[in-house]
Image (cartoon, rainbow, N blue to C red):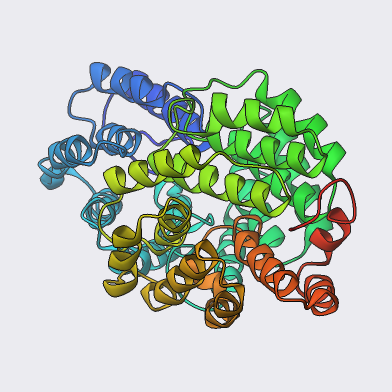
Length: 425
């Protein structure tokens, strides 16, 4: 009888020890716990020809794309001894690692219908940073909820599906349901960093600053800083400190755990989270030394030199404008690309105008981007960067009443929070 993984998928190995290690690696990877790669290596030590362990290792190596592609090629070389699911699994990861995101997204949806419990594949479309989340398509939040809902009958009461379901509920405004589902996911797997992350989003959307700080700061105290989500969860913590008027803590968390040089996370998070926090601090009237923007602009130019990742390009435009790097900003505006590339030039124009003190021009430039801002990707919490910039532009141009109405209409939870210790300047 063929061996199966924890989710009931047959696997092409005769080693029960290899399967047990693989299952542990999958749980660690989906929970964003440190060491998943080493556990997949344990599975390979038990069976060097275990293709699924190679795919898991490739996922764990994704920050080193050439290495991940080499590992996946080792799995692909075993294709003649694999079943149809495993071959399709490898094919989808090959699309992802070669930057063919649209093809991969369509392939995942087909795969999920045939093999709904192939968690390492179905997970690729199940988060705001996933293949649907970064599709650049209007309505992608509802699309993600629909995708996750199609999986629910196949999982029952399992923490993995609760985690995906909760964030899709949160991003479509179903906050009470989201929080209840996420509490269930955390109760089943308290070490699940994704659940802690998405609970933080629900608390943010509910305006629960104090409760959010209490929960997240306690949870982070036992979280390995080498994990990919540590820096981004720290961003949530620092943002709540800003909302709470605790500026000293905001700076400490930013420097120690969010910004380049402090965070051990992914470059995309170091850049976007730092830029977002610095800008929101400035809008709240907190002085930001110019050197911070110059350092971050240099970091952006080093790690993301070419336009094409629209969520990153949004934040690059902010960094380059605030650092006075006109050439870098112009390159973004003149050579847009990526899933929402048409929205990058107006954002670049807006931040360039703000850097010159021309808030009237910024206001006009922001309108087309704000109207379609979900296409940039990221969470609603992250895209508040644009919402608050627009409100600040209204205030700077003498339209305070319109600014207040706009914020109450578009982001009432932020309007309530900004009535507290900090207000946009």
